[in-house]
Length: 519
Image 1 (tube, rainbow, N blue to C red):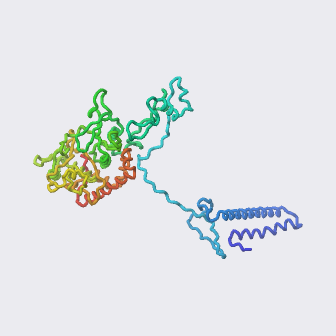
Image 2: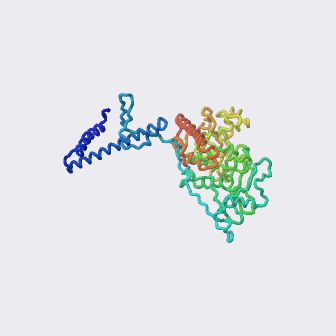
Image 3: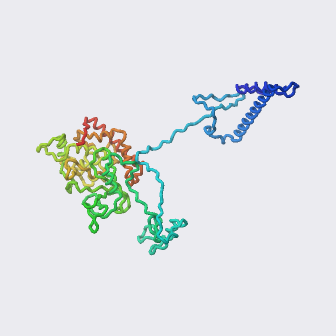
């Protein structure tokens, strides 16, 4: 018999040594059973019963642990135990003389760290809505056709067999296309009754928050939805080297041919020009507001069905020449002279000998910043003299690269104003390049620029450019999906953020001023 070594066991053995002889004397001796002796004996008997129950419970637990074995152990965090120390001090297990170790009277809990998830950008999480299917009332005398036992799928099959001229599983007339069958969706009439009411078409411009982002005006949202969701009433060709087409949206008056003017129009670009959509959102976030609204849209006029950008057609733009697509003819040398004169800055009227145009001096600073972030070269560097072009670039295709020896005579392109607002520029043809490496950035776009817009620079310096771009680009459902979702959009934003850091370094190194340009 081993001697108990814990305080609790010593107390139990001491009480048992006192109670057991006392009880035996009470029941075996001839002494009168007084009331005090009876109470004392009853208390000892209750305590002995409690000890017996504890011994049985511990034996059962040891038996279960032995049955589980080494492979049947559970996580210690699943075993409830009320006496867990809260001060973080756990005593080490006690060892016996024979080499065995007594398990401590504690429970070890393993805390697992939270899984890292991408942050939910405001307005990019669609709220959960209950689906409600409203069953239309049947016509008089046809209530039996829309009974509970008739499911929409069965009704569609019955209607499919009843429609003349359509064979189930029949092939299309064109060779090589997949076989098809007539699919009956919600809102289709079959047998003279409506099984389901027509479902409202969901807009490709999705806004899940209470309001649109602050940098997009109500007019911007209206035009974006017009470009993304309107029906195409006509198609026209534009005299452009890019092969763009003009889409007439929403139709015109009944009986008249669809044309731009009475009806809104959109310029449909090629799928490779998807950076137009990114450029529009970046322009609004930076507070420049110089680009035309642009969205991505899947068009039936593209052979492979790929999404392509569609840009709002603005009839208020000044007429442009066919060679430079500009409303103002400027060369690189003349442009550098205009930057030195600071035309129309601070309300100062330029002198005739300065050779100023009607364009405000601050417009060139906004254009240079915008073009550098997206590396747009077809406005200020049409000959690709500031970087190493690729074979597929327009300057190489048109043989303009050798003309860099005479840069002052190189013409600027896509310099466009509005008829009613000649002081401000409109940025058109904003095809950017995200694959240009940092050692091949075109710094010629910043040549001669001594001031930069404060609104744009403050956004670039802040830590919110990524969040705003994600929130803004998420609105365009087709563009978001065409770029691979959030993972693809993040890669584009990485490029812009890195160029923003380089631009801020350039501004600080050259001592350029950051001025408010909200004239």
